[in-house]
Length: 229
Image (cartoon, rainbow, N blue to C red; front, side):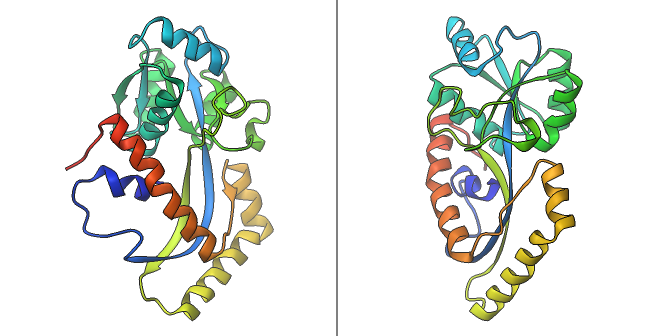
């Protein structure tokens, strides 16, 4: 996800993600979950949107850094929900979580893997999952789409790409090795337990996914006004 955002976030990049690389496979995705401090008077996405609209700019949200995936996920939410929420960038998710728990920040999109300990302890409330389907680790938490924003999806993901013009035989061999590893029961179960969704897509599928993600996040970057360099 970060690389597809970078294509429009950075004014100058010394590579082109589509021209300079070949897709091998998308290994796994990690959905974001919308978390709020328990003091926030909202127990659902619709209630949060209503609360934000009663006081534009009075609520704030954290991100792990300007232009990062969690920042763009919330900007997508803000745009689709039509609300004004103030952005407070942090240097990493850890410091952001600390301030959220302390009540200095009202909300943030965390990856499910990072959110689980805080949700289970009751220190933060989970309102919605940002993927197209619910997370096995938080099965009682609806998706953002189910909660009222059709088409909303924001997941961070991990994949394998190789330099352009890599021989097809090499790409196919790499794909076979990585997907075999993902199918191994101990690997698959470990990833699921930590909030990851194993994927193992084909090179064609992964290439198409990356190609679709670039314009999607470019629109969010432009709307947010975020820029680096």
